[in-house]
Length: 391
Ligand SMILES: Cc1cc2nc3c(=O)[nH]c(=O)nc-3n(C[C@H](O)[C@H](O)[C@H](O)COP(=O)(O)OP(=O)(O)OC[C@H]3O[C@@H](n4cnc5c(N)ncnc54)[C@H](O)[C@@H]3O)c2cc1C
Image (tube, rainbow, N blue to C red; front, side, top):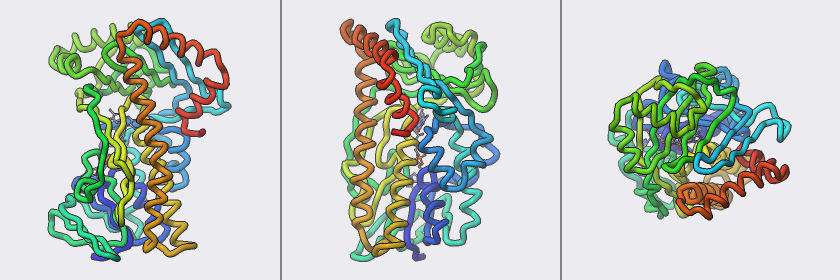
């Protein structure tokens, strides 16, 4: 099989890229070892994501926002507080003259909207239940082999195959990685007190807890509890009532009684970034290029920005340049996207260290920083714009 572009990984980033390029008439193969096209009927299950305004705009440009919006929950406030100190900060959309700061949506909702469009694009071939096993490159093409022994020849290959990317490892693209020594505990919750369209982030002595409103109801939300490994494993081993009591205490009873709505999931947290996002005929997007701590809810937002940039560069080269034979496109992509990713990694690390510290001075500094940011309007506005992705 021969095409212009192969994309390995049909998660949100890979599928969105296939949609953008396929809509413009490029021949694309989208390969996934699972079945991401079968998100329906489990739309409200699995991972939820907060999408910032920049990502919403990208999804609108791709023609899928109208299908996603009815299944998403807009939030207009982010409330962050430090359970170890006395400080808090509130970001409201009205501070930047917007109606909302972003939405919370299940990844499956986004996948469903993308694949509904993809199946009608004749130039996009969706290959599911087949994993990548090998890659070989020559001067003018790249050849992939799948575990069903299919061979696919392309001009360029995009790795969108997540944090443990095989595209990245087979291509020997160097990475920097370290463990956060934390695990993420995720579930859906029902709370006694309503969310009031607010996304909450609580910094505790054992790691940050995020409570995000969801479309299911005003008292329902997603829990993402990032905890130190030992404490987290202990939490996973105790009875549900004890777990909920600990959660109530850690969140200072601000949500009232909390109930779990689904089974708890957990996974280890690590930071990883590729030292370059492109090499020869290969480029990486999304978590295969950068995997960051979930505390600021920015991983997929970064990935969607990768897709937007790469789409722009590829389509520009098709219209005005030498098409895909110009591998400078991929180098340009790498150069443009790396700074955003490094900035986010640095920020997450600063948060992790700042809030993970037992030092009294750091605690005092945190209080001061929160109070200062809260009272300094230009700084506060910059922080809000940064979170909403509109800087
Ligand atoms: C607890 C938690 C909460 C988060 N919350 C947020 C948030 O609020 N906001 C936000 O922006 N981000 C958030 N993130 C990050 C976000 O979920 C990820 O950045 C995003 O899902 C990555 O998308 P992706 O398409 O790059 O990769 P993935 O979703 O990992 O998709 C990779 C795809 O590649 C396929 N694949 C893998 N290997 C192969 C192979 N060898 N051959 C073929 N196919 C393969 C897989 O089947 C999968 O479909 C969160 C992350 C965590 C852990």
